[in-house]
Length: 145
Image 1 (cartoon, one colour):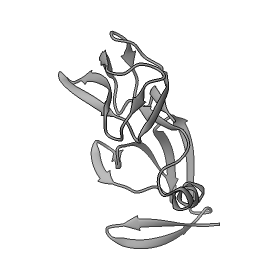
Image 2 (cartoon, helix red, strand yellow):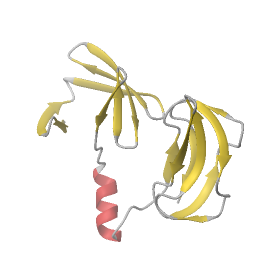
Image 3 (tube, one colour):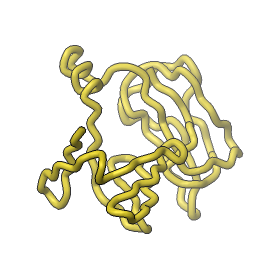
């Protein structure tokens, strides 16, 4: 099977024989390319490799088909911690309605407070953290449906 990857604005086809990708934890992947191992952390449209951010787009053909039929994102979306930190505030309640981009959780990391936005409009199915919790990169913060 071949995958299409956008590299520096050009689409490149890569076979599964050339690339191996394994999920280490949510939002973190181990990628083997040509015998070279890379740890890739993905959040908010950026892939972090060796401390450098690269803009990425990941498209699951099943999600694209669902969106085309319904006119927008469908199904559950999981909000993940982009980096290790401490939860300062939870801004919504389970069962509450949210709009796309509305703040869900505030996480402090490296002495900066970051408001984590809802990935879509919908209902808050669950909040997996509370104020004062320490979170790891890729840890689930909330689920929106």
